[in-house]
Image (cartoon, rainbow, N blue to C red; front, side, top):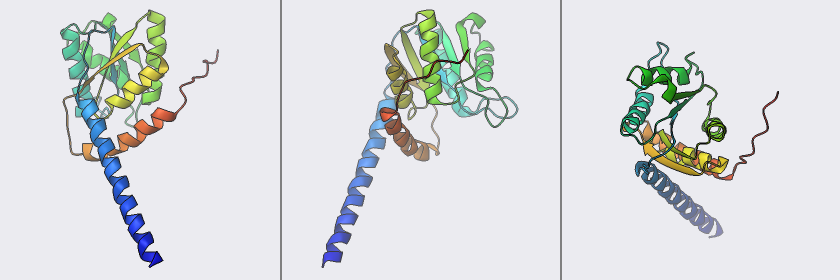
Length: 200
């Protein structure tokens, strides 16, 4: 009898946990899909895969296209492209810069961060750059499920005003990426945002 009660408790707890997790994923996706687009000093595009031939992946191209759209609408006049050199051997940030330049964005309007090897690093680097340039507001641009975490990181680093827009690109892997992103978001909610000073 005791064993049956324990089994029932475990099953119910598992179902409740699964339901809570599913709800969390749904809330995260809903948040990321509801853009908050306002005039800002800077657009921040987070990096993603670049193919070995130097071509942005469809996910990354969608982020850049959204940034280009907002730039042309005058939402922001500077674009920061942030990424790192991936396993494919390409510097994501430079590829992103060239993508925008080839579509008419002036060189002076594109800022490059080649040390954005994580969302955390991009947020830290963005905050530092904004402080140096006296910028106060930013629109973060990424996949919808990634937007909440990127926005959270920027705010926790001290960016005064953070808005958002999601890339208009959806794929089957989102079914895996969105749940994984919830775990990452929770981890970012509790991590430290103290960054040690750079070594001379």
